[in-house]
Image (tube, rainbow, N blue to C red; front, side, top):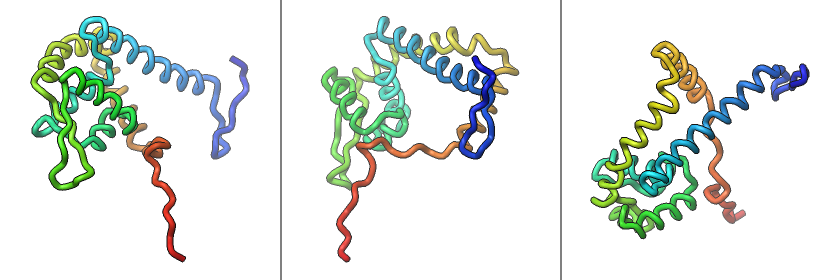
Length: 174
């Protein structure tokens, strides 16, 4: 990589080493996620996103979450979650229920077959995380990485919602 530094927004330089670290962090996250998803697909015919939906629902009171809350927890757009819930509902793993307090609101609810599928996939998920990630870190490295990622997460402003979720301009009487 050339020895050129890149100026960031505030005029501070990003060194080639820093840029390499940033790119490596992105690549590691994508690679570990792909390997984890491949294990779930091969052994359980379940995508990582589907696993995460089932897991979040299983952890929620009554095994149900409003669709908006679920989308936030699994890091999917609302439209992406809707498509995934459609597929999971077609497989009998989740159901949709109307929200009694809000006629427009919907809950995603984990079914018994969904809970069983999650229980079957969980050992694969946990084993993959252990073997492909956690076993590569000793206790000190794990604490340091956790502290670093927590600090970055806490200092990072939440990203704007995806295009399909941004508020639309309204006509304001003038």
